[in-house]
Length: 249
Length: 243
Figure 1 (spheres, chains in turn yellow, purple):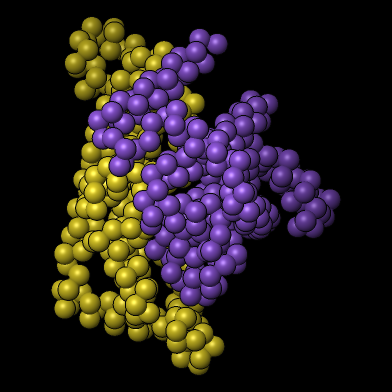
Figure 2 (cartoon, chains in turn cyan, orange):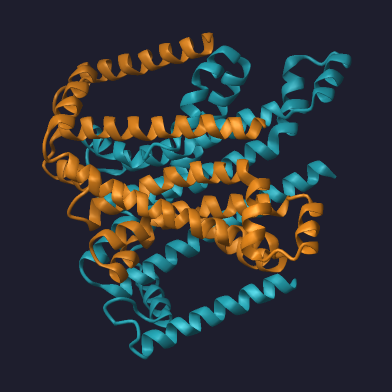
């Protein structure tokens, strides 16, 4: 194990121990935060009882639908724009500004349009994710080496085989980087929308526990969300790195 | 120039789509573009709008000051110290990718309702891009600059001011631009739940009372403001990178 990893693990463990001590000693009030050990037992009980299984399923399926549809749509839109420079130049300022806009402010409008159900939540997740996928696709297609495209010409490859044997493999690390970003953004959009105003999902349950002063449940759920999102993102990050490594080999 | 014309055409298409959508769904859900602009104009002239603007901008200003200072100092520190950087980077990147909103109740528990929680939550959103961009940029400073600094026995602050900052200005500015967008989102979100004034509070109120015109005109103003600030910062950003 690398020294940095060791130091990181030790600091995290020490940090949790200090937090535990501060909570137990009353330095941090019982109504402010429950000790980390209590968060763990709380989430274990909640998961064991199965009473939030439906909420977990709702959130995760929302994220999956948003991320998959945003990845597909973002890829197609990115590829179209790449083939059509005039449209790309026109849309460029919109893409560059997109993430500066607080997308959640559109959520109330979607609530009115689609009603209080899962649809506006998934739409927000999709909107968070799709532009990241578009820009990653454009970036990946821009970086296909000229030499490879010329090789395809020299070998007189048709456009189908050029796309599948040259362009897509060369652009794949960036395209998958887009999928990673789209997934992370879909989590942000879905959980945020659930928290703001909804009647289902993990974000909603956290808000509910907060309003009921049910600290053990609230902190347990937050820990669970951090764990799930953290491990999904870490896995995607590792996958992307292995793809990039393969390409530079 | 023609690209700019095309962009305007695209903007026109968006407005047309909006108008078309209004014809389909009607008054309960949407206000048409022209009427929304009219309402936004009325809003700008109304008395109870500006105190909310002032309160949002105060929180935004304080948060930006804090995160720029802390983000720069920590970014340079983690960038210069290899081991420290390696220790914290995965933690920071993980935290960056987690939806901050799930931590909102914790912020409220510790800071209570009011300016403090708004600022803290906004800083949580905005500091990481500044910190991470600065750290990455400092790591790629040409080693000869750092050796020169060591030969001249500069202390940390002199190093920050006369070596690290000038060498990394374009990347730091990019971090700042992205951080600013996050900060604004943080201010609005936390005003929606944990404040009794501000634009986020106004928006949440309008949602509660289902005032479609107010929701739409506020949204229009917020989106326009965010877009204009970002386009301005983007302009500076691109000039810096071209140097």
